[in-house]
Image (cartoon, rainbow, N blue to C red; front, side, top):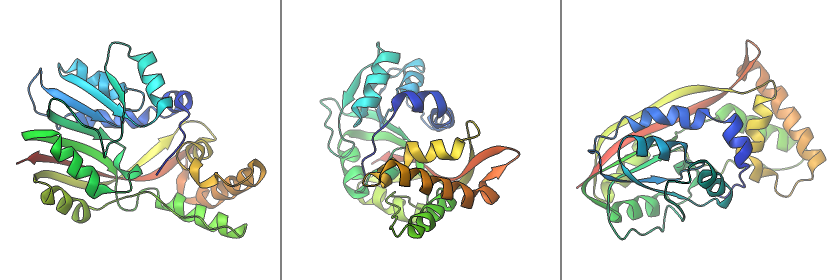
Length: 249
């Protein structure tokens, strides 16, 4: 699933993505000097945290816009334009890390297989991404709003439960050591927080829709979501996250 990223808007208004990701970093226990790959690095904020922990890092992303921002913000780090399902390392990694990425990827079987092939035996695979039911209120509102204009909205995100993702890890030679699926209502910046979130993360749904109709659809989504997602003059998106750690056998 492809999305065109506004890297400046992302960096300025969606810092919660990497702020929450700092907690996922704590699952890594490989020693300093280990070779750690950051898959879907975005603007490089968490790659910087990995480097600060003393790791040798390589950061991969498939978005040229995000990598341009990452290189601008962190010129001392190593970034590569590549695909999470197809990248190849000349030196196998001691650990592979990812935050808020895998729900964008259609083929999880191919993804896990490729990660396994690029990780040393005994290596750590630590990640978090959107879990089953993530932003369900927003996606249902999108479906309702699209329908009111005679259009069809499809939620193309690949959200998973523990029971769906853990077997893929085991199939490709991993032992699951930690897994949790949890709710994480996430505050959005500003009075137009939900509208901005939709534009940032659901932009591909409007690829064949003119700007006037897009504005009307988003306005309706905001109206539908307000009773559940607007509290104390703040917007919250009903995030659900799947966080896991596995060891390559």
